[in-house]
Image (tube, rainbow, N blue to C red; front, top):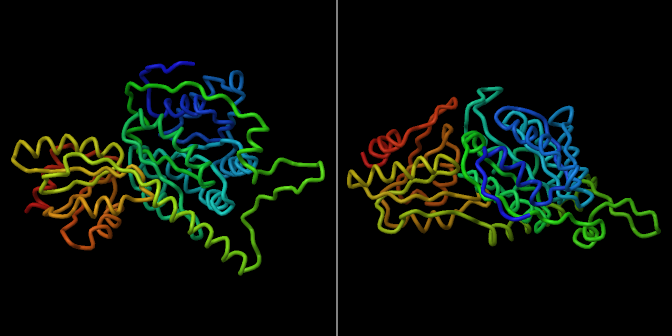
Length: 360
């Protein structure tokens, strides 16, 4: 199947990308604003074309444990949900991370805390980048700002998940999930055979009954010394990921007097704000973290040199700002601007915040 140019929502694009990138199984549960992922998969019926399993589980907890089981067999499996639903999945995500299994999780964020609102938010930053569940673990976290990146990050997410045998989260805000844009869909990846899975995933449980050693997948270890070894192995993997997989985008950073740091769709609003600030003679550069974990700490530290101040713009009360402040070591002022409750800031508001909070 050749590349196709289509107009679709971010959530719809995720579903198409999952099929095109060879996903073996999707297990989910409807919740606004990401329900179109499951609905689109049901409409496309990939079980008739690629053999992909699509199942609406009885709950978010059931869905993530189905992902756990599928990942343990070496299959490319995924789930999607929105903020309260992802909260329910956290125990299972921690189990998957501890068992060193590849899996893809989509979170299309809505406002909270609690059931909150169905409007867009970026308030799950802490939940995604600081673990979310119990224990010392990390997810690789990708933050798309366009519908095209929603497509691309499905393929990238699966590639990273299998490369590091670690779960990956696509952390999208509700704006990207619901907006419609032109996208280029990739060619169909061929489905892996059972033999290819055994070769690529020698750790996978495959129900062997021919006398060979069976692989047992678990996150349980009752001996403290062995559990410490497992934790050290995880931490070594995370250091490797930090060295090799940190991603970010820079816009007009060189020669700027001020920086704006923003991720997801809010970075696009800030790009327009940068243009409006330039009309006032204010030189602004933008850094957009693409991986929220690993966070582009060194890139922000370098970009901040010689700057007069930084404005973090987030659709929350101030979460990423903590990582930005750690990156610059209090060498320059770092301020926050955000809207809450699902209210999306305008470029004009961002410029005003820059003038009042940073430039003063």
